[in-house]
Length: 543
Image (tube, rainbow, N blue to C red; front, side):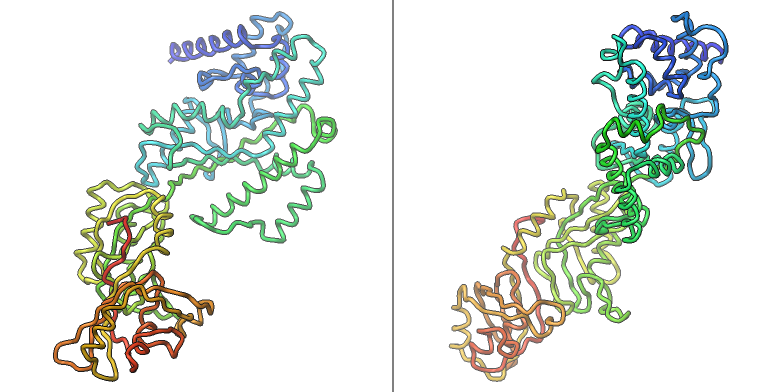
């Protein structure tokens, strides 16, 4: 153990020696940063000497002080305030780059392992506990704006103190200085890659580290100009959250968005404060901090999409869950049957069902089926081809043969846009069982069958006026065929192909003259529709 400790300390000294050779300002200035409560890692950031090697737990204030004593005689001797700060956290990063922080269970400390390994271990535990399967990940880090204010305060303080010294311009705060957020990502990512056996990069699986510091943030709020205070009061009166709620996992996501918007406003306010005003308002250097940040770890995977075509074989199943006055309409819904089976395999938080149009509850969807997408939110695992096949089989082999799916596959989100755009252009084919008030002659059947690309005008049907705008729409009936039902003089099967958005029921009976021409008007008799099936939705994808 002693050998390991000695080796780690030697590596820490090696890091400091390389930094001193390449970018350190005079050592008394480095020591001064240490004495006003700036942690070793932030010092290395501020002088442009930060690297992934800075993750060593042995890189402590005492090691840096010892190094400075060895190389600068002015620092030797007597007690030093930088060595009596065991209970304090960095006055810039608030301990984010150091080995302690609060979680919901209380104070977390590394207990013999590096801070970075400790954080990485906790992240890995969260991922495992939630059951995520991960081969790649990205890190999102949220820091309280007070950290940016503290760093600016340190920069202005050092400028006031050393601006007249020749070395200051070249050796203090160079262009390559990286932020606390990027420094933390640089430290955590390699350790997390090893622990999770996964690659870090831009990925749909995101690990979010949200650091907050209530005391320091509250003090920052009190120091900001009155404009910000008024903004905060307005947010409070308005409930504070102006988001539209899209893709929220739960109320915590809403709070995260509200916090993010508030933080963005604080950053903008800080940027608008001139240096002179900043120095008059904020303490230089920033005061030492005796409480660490609070850390919340959360995970989120971007939605995945499964697409295919569904057939609806029942006249008592709606496309989506349909409830009126707390009473369910129909026995089930395509949305629930498909969605529940998909979510069970993918282990997502929830799912959303999207389809290329819809049929009424009493209309069957036959033929090649209707294109659909299931958007699954925050899945724990992305299904393999075998698992996608299992989903399809579970749906098709269910005891109640309400719904079947075919050509189910994992698709990209671009299909969603293609499906929406294709809706307006697609053609649909139907078969309708109709009744007429008189017997149809061969001439009647012939006249129907020779009709091609007939334009009709439809006002919003009476049956849907309560939920749709009263509009007048022009639609095309591309072709029709009609045949007699054997053994009947009043019942016929009408086959037709129409433009998307045509109201077929109204085209048959005329809807009290609101659709013209109609089958009834063409035949000069009363016509009623008894049953309707969609037999084809002509779209070139999800075949």
